[in-house]
Structures are given as structure tokens and as C-alpha cells.
Image 1 (cartoon, one colour):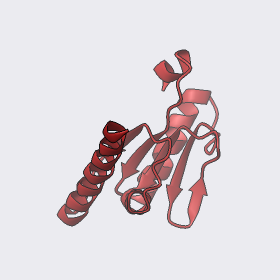
Image 2 (cartoon, rainbow, N blue to C red):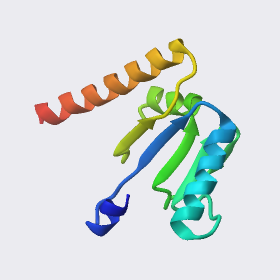
Image 3 (cartoon, one colour):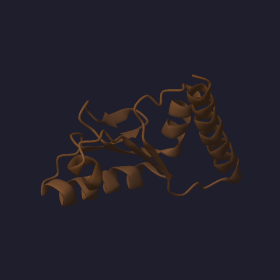
Length: 115
């Protein structure tokens, strides 16, 4: 993120976490370390079921694996530059998640090549 800011590049990073508490705690910790305050929802945020602490300025979003799966299924990856998959607890979710990531990015690559 720092490199992107220094080079005036847009960055939008999605980080999956297996548990709701982990997504919230990491967002709070990273936000505090980056800004010196607990301003979750500005530059760093989180998205879990029934609780979304993000804004249009959010560049780093921690989320549960289920939320990431919904984003991938809906093809809502506009502006996403990085996806970090931390820990996936079940083999089913792991295969589904990795398959969707591969499919979405291969589709985007195919469109870019054909243009």
C-alpha cells in the first residue's frame, strides 16, 4: 500500500479471514498501526455478515471467506488489485475459493488479450 501511495497508484486489497473476530481484530490492529488511531472504516476496514465497516476511501478490507466468495460469485471485482487468502478452514471452501479466483482472473485476462 505504501508503494502504491508513493507512486500515486490506486490499490484495493481484499484479505480473507476464516473467522469474523479475526477480520475485525486485524482491521483494528492494522488501522491503528497505519494511522495511529482506531479509525476502522476509512483506509482500512472490514466486511463480515451483517456488519460492513468500509467507505469509498477504504483500500484494505479484511473479510470472512464467505463474504469473499459472494464478491467472487457476483463478479464484483472492479478496482480490486490484490486478493490475499489467509487461511481457509475447510477443503470445500478452499477449492471453491481458489477455483473462483482463478476463473475470474483468467476471464479478465482473456478479455484483455482479445481487445
